[in-house]
Length: 258
Image (cartoon, rainbow, N blue to C red; front, side, top):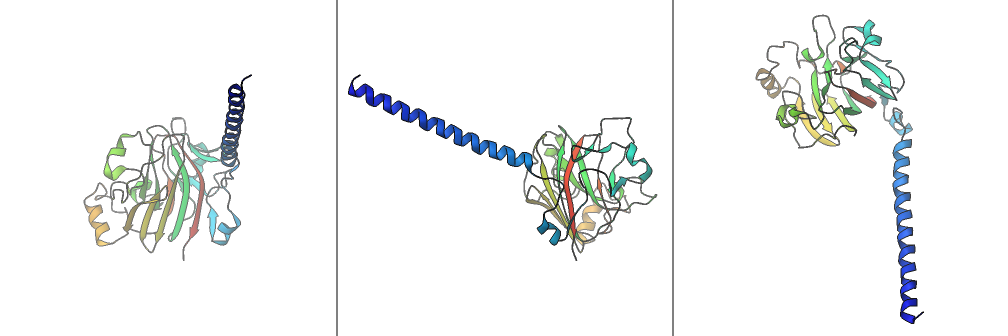
Protein backbone atom coordinates (compact mmCIF):
# COMPACT_ATOMS: atom_id res chain seq x y z
CA UNK A 1 0.00 0.00 0.00
CA UNK A 2 1.36 3.41 -0.93
CA UNK A 3 1.54 6.24 1.54
CA UNK A 4 -1.19 8.10 -0.38
CA UNK A 5 -3.47 5.06 -0.30
CA UNK A 6 -2.87 4.63 3.44
CA UNK A 7 -3.76 8.27 4.15
CA UNK A 8 -6.88 8.00 2.00
CA UNK A 9 -7.97 4.90 3.93
CA UNK A 10 -7.50 6.66 7.26
CA UNK A 11 -9.47 9.67 6.01
CA UNK A 12 -12.32 7.43 4.83
CA UNK A 13 -12.52 5.71 8.22
CA UNK A 14 -12.61 9.07 10.04
CA UNK A 15 -15.40 10.40 7.78
CA UNK A 16 -17.43 7.21 8.13
CA UNK A 17 -17.05 7.26 11.91
CA UNK A 18 -18.07 10.91 12.04
CA UNK A 19 -21.17 10.26 9.91
CA UNK A 20 -22.21 7.37 12.14
CA UNK A 21 -21.76 9.55 15.24
CA UNK A 22 -23.81 12.40 13.71
CA UNK A 23 -26.52 9.96 12.65
CA UNK A 24 -26.66 8.51 16.16
CA UNK A 25 -26.89 11.98 17.71
CA UNK A 26 -29.66 13.02 15.29
CA UNK A 27 -31.53 9.78 16.01
CA UNK A 28 -31.20 10.32 19.76
CA UNK A 29 -32.46 13.90 19.49
CA UNK A 30 -35.37 12.84 17.30
CA UNK A 31 -36.19 9.94 19.62
CA UNK A 32 -36.05 12.21 22.67
CA UNK A 33 -38.54 14.59 21.04
CA UNK A 34 -40.79 11.65 20.17
CA UNK A 35 -40.73 10.35 23.71
CA UNK A 36 -41.33 13.83 25.15
CA UNK A 37 -44.43 14.25 22.99
CA UNK A 38 -45.64 10.71 23.68
CA UNK A 39 -45.15 10.96 27.42
CA UNK A 40 -46.53 14.47 27.85
CA UNK A 41 -49.30 14.37 30.41
CA UNK A 42 -52.62 15.77 29.24
CA UNK A 43 -55.74 16.82 31.13
CA UNK A 44 -53.81 17.35 34.34
CA UNK A 45 -52.63 20.42 36.20
CA UNK A 46 -49.16 21.20 37.42
CA UNK A 47 -48.83 22.19 41.09
CA UNK A 48 -47.97 25.75 40.04
CA UNK A 49 -51.15 25.90 37.94
CA UNK A 50 -53.22 24.82 40.92
CA UNK A 51 -51.58 27.56 42.98
CA UNK A 52 -52.47 30.05 40.25
CA UNK A 53 -56.14 29.09 40.52
CA UNK A 54 -56.53 26.86 37.46
CA UNK A 55 -59.06 24.05 37.43
CA UNK A 56 -59.87 21.43 34.82
CA UNK A 57 -63.11 21.51 32.85
CA UNK A 58 -62.32 18.04 31.49
CA UNK A 59 -60.63 15.26 33.45
CA UNK A 60 -59.76 13.13 30.42
CA UNK A 61 -62.12 10.33 31.45
CA UNK A 62 -65.73 11.51 31.71
CA UNK A 63 -68.04 14.33 30.63
CA UNK A 64 -68.62 15.31 34.26
CA UNK A 65 -69.37 19.02 34.40
CA UNK A 66 -70.89 19.09 30.91
CA UNK A 67 -74.29 18.37 29.39
CA UNK A 68 -76.21 18.73 26.14
CA UNK A 69 -77.64 22.23 25.70
CA UNK A 70 -81.25 22.28 26.93
CA UNK A 71 -81.26 18.45 26.83
CA UNK A 72 -79.27 17.32 29.88
CA UNK A 73 -80.96 13.92 30.02
CA UNK A 74 -79.86 13.18 26.44
CA UNK A 75 -76.12 13.81 26.95
CA UNK A 76 -75.25 10.10 27.01
CA UNK A 77 -77.07 9.61 23.70
CA UNK A 78 -75.43 12.58 21.98
CA UNK A 79 -72.52 12.79 19.57
CA UNK A 80 -70.27 13.84 22.44
CA UNK A 81 -68.07 11.19 24.03
CA UNK A 82 -64.70 10.69 25.67
CA UNK A 83 -62.24 8.88 23.42
CA UNK A 84 -58.54 8.31 24.13
CA UNK A 85 -58.39 11.11 26.68
CA UNK A 86 -60.18 13.62 24.46
CA UNK A 87 -63.68 15.03 24.16
CA UNK A 88 -64.71 13.81 20.73
CA UNK A 89 -67.69 15.00 18.72
CA UNK A 90 -68.86 12.07 16.61
CA UNK A 91 -70.78 14.46 14.39
CA UNK A 92 -71.11 12.16 11.38
CA UNK A 93 -73.14 9.55 13.29
CA UNK A 94 -76.72 10.54 12.51
CA UNK A 95 -78.10 8.15 15.12
CA UNK A 96 -76.82 10.44 17.86
CA UNK A 97 -78.85 13.19 19.52
CA UNK A 98 -77.78 16.50 17.97
CA UNK A 99 -76.73 19.47 20.07
CA UNK A 100 -73.91 21.49 21.59
CA UNK A 101 -72.10 20.52 24.79
CA UNK A 102 -72.22 23.14 27.55
CA UNK A 103 -70.70 23.53 30.98
CA UNK A 104 -72.93 22.98 33.99
CA UNK A 105 -71.57 26.18 35.49
CA UNK A 106 -71.73 29.77 34.20
CA UNK A 107 -68.61 31.98 34.24
CA UNK A 108 -68.04 35.72 34.17
CA UNK A 109 -64.42 36.83 34.61
CA UNK A 110 -61.94 34.14 33.60
CA UNK A 111 -59.13 32.84 31.44
CA UNK A 112 -59.93 29.70 29.44
CA UNK A 113 -57.42 27.53 27.58
CA UNK A 114 -57.84 24.39 25.50
CA UNK A 115 -56.38 22.38 22.62
CA UNK A 116 -58.47 21.48 19.58
CA UNK A 117 -58.47 19.77 16.21
CA UNK A 118 -61.02 19.75 13.41
CA UNK A 119 -61.63 17.13 10.74
CA UNK A 120 -60.54 17.93 7.18
CA UNK A 121 -62.40 21.05 5.97
CA UNK A 122 -64.06 21.12 9.37
CA UNK A 123 -65.94 24.07 10.83
CA UNK A 124 -66.97 24.55 14.44
CA UNK A 125 -66.83 26.89 17.36
CA UNK A 126 -66.65 27.48 21.09
CA UNK A 127 -69.23 29.82 22.58
CA UNK A 128 -68.97 31.98 25.67
CA UNK A 129 -71.68 33.79 27.65
CA UNK A 130 -74.30 31.23 26.62
CA UNK A 131 -77.70 31.65 28.28
CA UNK A 132 -79.42 28.30 28.75
CA UNK A 133 -83.16 28.80 29.06
CA UNK A 134 -86.07 27.26 27.11
CA UNK A 135 -86.63 30.47 25.16
CA UNK A 136 -83.28 30.05 23.38
CA UNK A 137 -83.14 27.12 20.98
CA UNK A 138 -79.40 27.24 20.24
CA UNK A 139 -76.19 28.38 21.90
CA UNK A 140 -75.58 30.95 19.14
CA UNK A 141 -78.82 32.77 20.01
CA UNK A 142 -76.95 34.35 22.93
CA UNK A 143 -73.34 33.18 22.95
CA UNK A 144 -70.36 34.82 21.27
CA UNK A 145 -68.46 32.37 19.06
CA UNK A 146 -64.74 31.72 18.86
CA UNK A 147 -64.37 30.29 15.37
CA UNK A 148 -62.69 26.89 14.93
CA UNK A 149 -61.70 26.13 11.36
CA UNK A 150 -59.55 23.61 9.52
CA UNK A 151 -57.43 25.47 6.91
CA UNK A 152 -58.96 23.66 3.91
CA UNK A 153 -62.45 24.96 4.72
CA UNK A 154 -63.62 27.66 2.30
CA UNK A 155 -64.43 30.09 5.16
CA UNK A 156 -60.69 30.52 5.68
CA UNK A 157 -60.89 33.11 2.89
CA UNK A 158 -63.73 35.05 4.54
CA UNK A 159 -62.39 37.71 6.98
CA UNK A 160 -65.26 37.47 9.50
CA UNK A 161 -65.13 33.65 9.55
CA UNK A 162 -61.42 32.96 9.87
CA UNK A 163 -60.10 30.90 12.81
CA UNK A 164 -59.85 32.76 16.08
CA UNK A 165 -62.30 35.47 15.05
CA UNK A 166 -65.46 36.48 16.84
CA UNK A 167 -67.59 34.84 14.18
CA UNK A 168 -69.51 37.28 12.01
CA UNK A 169 -68.38 40.36 13.93
CA UNK A 170 -64.63 40.87 14.17
CA UNK A 171 -61.88 39.89 11.69
CA UNK A 172 -58.48 38.73 12.91
CA UNK A 173 -56.49 41.51 14.58
CA UNK A 174 -53.30 39.68 13.63
CA UNK A 175 -53.08 37.22 10.78
CA UNK A 176 -52.60 33.62 11.88
CA UNK A 177 -53.49 30.28 10.33
CA UNK A 178 -54.86 27.29 12.20
CA UNK A 179 -52.87 24.09 12.09
CA UNK A 180 -54.24 21.51 9.64
CA UNK A 181 -56.06 18.26 10.33
CA UNK A 182 -54.01 15.94 12.54
CA UNK A 183 -52.27 18.78 14.36
CA UNK A 184 -53.32 20.50 17.57
CA UNK A 185 -54.20 24.15 17.99
CA UNK A 186 -54.21 26.01 21.30
CA UNK A 187 -56.83 28.61 22.13
CA UNK A 188 -56.91 31.15 24.94
CA UNK A 189 -59.97 33.23 25.79
CA UNK A 190 -59.89 35.97 28.41
CA UNK A 191 -62.95 37.82 29.64
CA UNK A 192 -62.61 40.47 32.31
CA UNK A 193 -65.22 43.10 33.17
CA UNK A 194 -66.84 42.71 29.76
CA UNK A 195 -63.63 42.89 27.75
CA UNK A 196 -63.00 39.84 25.54
CA UNK A 197 -59.67 38.72 24.10
CA UNK A 198 -59.24 35.73 21.78
CA UNK A 199 -55.89 34.08 21.03
CA UNK A 200 -54.97 31.37 18.52
CA UNK A 201 -51.66 29.57 18.98
CA UNK A 202 -50.32 32.46 21.06
CA UNK A 203 -51.44 35.23 18.68
CA UNK A 204 -54.10 37.82 19.65
CA UNK A 205 -56.90 37.46 17.09
CA UNK A 206 -59.82 39.42 18.54
CA UNK A 207 -60.54 42.05 21.17
CA UNK A 208 -63.94 43.56 21.96
CA UNK A 209 -65.86 45.07 24.85
CA UNK A 210 -69.37 43.83 25.53
CA UNK A 211 -72.01 46.58 25.41
CA UNK A 212 -69.61 49.25 24.19
CA UNK A 213 -70.91 51.51 21.43
CA UNK A 214 -68.59 49.80 18.94
CA UNK A 215 -69.89 46.38 19.97
CA UNK A 216 -73.53 47.41 19.63
CA UNK A 217 -72.90 48.95 16.21
CA UNK A 218 -71.23 45.79 14.97
CA UNK A 219 -74.16 43.66 16.10
CA UNK A 220 -76.64 46.07 14.48
CA UNK A 221 -74.88 45.58 11.13
CA UNK A 222 -74.47 41.81 11.44
CA UNK A 223 -76.56 38.66 11.03
CA UNK A 224 -77.31 38.94 14.76
CA UNK A 225 -79.25 42.19 14.48
CA UNK A 226 -82.55 40.33 14.88
CA UNK A 227 -81.35 38.15 17.77
CA UNK A 228 -82.51 40.08 20.88
CA UNK A 229 -80.50 37.98 23.33
CA UNK A 230 -77.20 37.90 21.44
CA UNK A 231 -74.07 39.38 23.00
CA UNK A 232 -75.90 41.25 25.71
CA UNK A 233 -74.17 39.95 28.84
CA UNK A 234 -70.59 39.17 29.85
CA UNK A 235 -71.53 36.09 31.85
CA UNK A 236 -72.77 32.64 30.95
CA UNK A 237 -71.92 29.08 30.10
CA UNK A 238 -69.21 27.80 27.76
CA UNK A 239 -70.27 25.58 24.85
CA UNK A 240 -68.56 23.30 22.34
CA UNK A 241 -70.37 23.33 19.01
CA UNK A 242 -71.54 20.32 17.04
CA UNK A 243 -71.63 21.71 13.52
CA UNK A 244 -71.68 18.44 11.53
CA UNK A 245 -67.88 17.99 11.57
CA UNK A 246 -65.81 15.75 13.82
CA UNK A 247 -63.79 17.64 16.41
CA UNK A 248 -61.45 16.85 19.29
CA UNK A 249 -60.68 18.74 22.52
CA UNK A 250 -58.21 18.23 25.35
CA UNK A 251 -56.46 20.14 28.15
CA UNK A 252 -59.53 22.29 28.83
CA UNK A 253 -58.76 24.42 31.87
CA UNK A 254 -60.04 27.63 33.38
CA UNK A 255 -59.15 30.06 36.13
CA UNK A 256 -61.57 32.64 37.39
CA UNK A 257 -60.32 36.20 37.64
CA UNK A 258 -61.32 38.45 40.52
